[in-house]
Every structure is written in C-alpha cells, then in structure tokens.
Image (cartoon, rainbow, N blue to C red; front, side, top):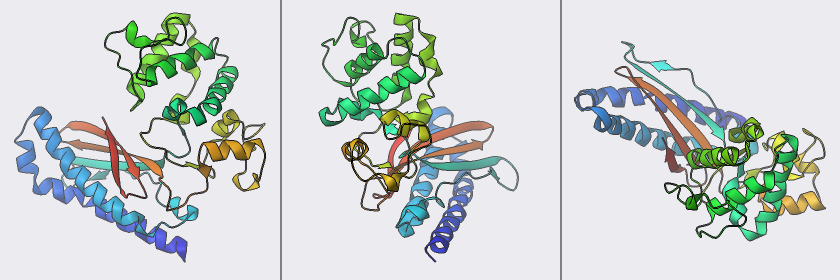
Length: 287
C-alpha cells in the first residue's frame, strides 16, 4: 500500500512538472522577446518555480526508505506539439556520496583523511597527503600553509578560500596538484561519483551508499561487502555515527540532486539543483 501511494505521488509529480510546458508557452511571447541572459532568466524562473512546487507536493507521502526509489527517476525528453520546446529531468540521491566539506570539522577530519588515503592507495596517487593538505588549506579561510605550497590562494590570486560549493573550485585543486606533482593518476579518480559539497551536515544513506565509498570509508574490507543492517558495533559503527550514516528518516536532512534539461527556441540549457526532502525545497542552484 505504501509503495502504491508513493508511486501515485510520483506519477502526479511527473504530470504536474510536464505542465511547465503550458507555463512556458503562456509566457513565451514575453520570454522570447527578451534577448540573451534576460530571456534565460525568465525561462529559468518559470521552470524552477513550477519544479519546486511539484517536488514539494510529490515528497509529502515519502515516509520511509522504500518510498525513495520511486522518486529517483529520469524522464524522456517531453516535446511540445510543435516541437519547439523540449524538456526533461533527472532526480538522483546525493546521500550515496560524501560531503567533502565535512573534512574541515575536527570530529570528522580523521575519518575523511583516511577516506582520501584509501582513495590514494586504490588509484595509485603518488602523494595523496599533499592533495589532502591542498584541500584542507583551500576549505579553511586562513592563509597559513600546512606544508610548502599547499595554500593555493598565495600562488593563484583568483583562487578564494572557503567551503566548496561545487566542482569548479575542486577541479582547480586537482589541476594545481597535477601541476605541482605531474601525477596524472589524480584524474583517474571518479570524483563526481564519490563526493559532493554541501553547506550543511546532511545524512548519508547507508542503504544507498556506493560500494566504493563504503570500502574507502573502512566500512567493508571488500568492495560490495557492506550491509547497512548488519553493522551493530565496533569501528564501523563509530564511523557511521561520526559521519551521520544511517537509514533514511523523514526527520533527517536528506539531499538529492536534480538536473533539468530544456531546449527553447534553439537555445539549450541545463540547470543542476539540490533539493532537500525534509524542507521540501530547492536549497542550491548550480549552473
């Protein structure tokens, strides 16, 4: 019964979000009469407003972990009758990844340094400790170097310290590491599949945690050998407690991502959003 209610909720969501077409074409004259960035802002405003409204409605009936699977969907491209407008979206969990901004917090730092050490060992990175110190010196806001040449802001004047908001600045850290070490192995890490950057401490969903992440965190001794419900005590339980790794609960802050694709008047656009289930709203927009 719970599954059918959740599925019905998602079907209503899909139907509702498809109504973005009507909203856009109702305002199409106004939107298309504007040029460049102003027209794009108008389009995005209509889409984001409707998307957030339908998302908020759809998650009302998500009460447990089983319900979540129905929310994570990828739609085909939906076309208007005349074919001038194409629209589609994907919703996916971010709670299967690690919020790397947490490394700056003292009670979590040791666990995440070991996490990066395991990544370095697995992908044969020559100096993962140097990369970790680059990351720490980039996220903290002072300009004190942990080691020689680890404070990028001292060497690249356009680089600004502080918590990371997306991959743009993280990619600069990766590039800086490569320029300093000539170690191309850093590019072999599938960072976007493993990490993200959040502004709050969101839960990590132990049922959806990626097998590689469970292994790198030290929750399993083999890739694919971690079972959430079997962890009762010991080192793994301490890691889970420190990093807020648990089963989904509607009372926890739970982050998911949404990518919206659309093509209007031969202009292709993509919006990447962060949606929070407890608050039922968009909490960040990336371009």
